[in-house]
Image 1 (cartoon, rainbow, N blue to C red):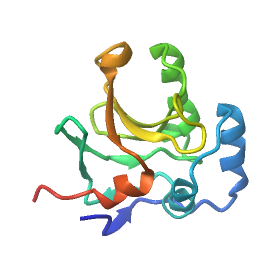
Image 2 (image 1 turned 60 degrees about the vertical axis):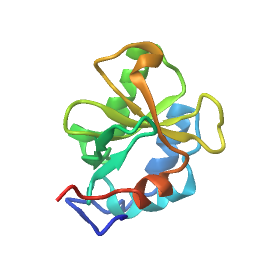
Image 3 (image 1 turned 180 degrees about the horizontal axis):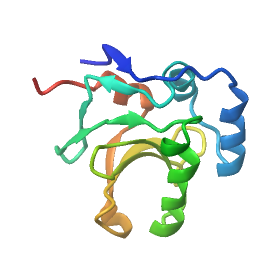
Length: 144
């Protein structure tokens, strides 16, 4: 289990963009996430399946990008205003329009990872996944 590699990653040449995004969101990203983004910005992990706390399986399609305008993290942040759930910051997506997010509602220092189901509303849309970004990556597996 865990990451074997990344496809279609764009190296982040200007790391100050992470700070700009943090300031826009009013948060501080965990260091493990920032290290990953610097090397795998917008990338697709392999393997890419993960389990949620409720036992459901999810697919980690790709990290949101800090540079690609079509998959830009700032573009996906608008969902939080639409969902009326403040404190969720999107970091990745699945192939079906759902998002993996940091959940800053209980902690600004160590946000947990949640799955945001875009077809649900309110708390029904939020499914806990794991405690840290590293735990998410370490838990990725293949169904093949």
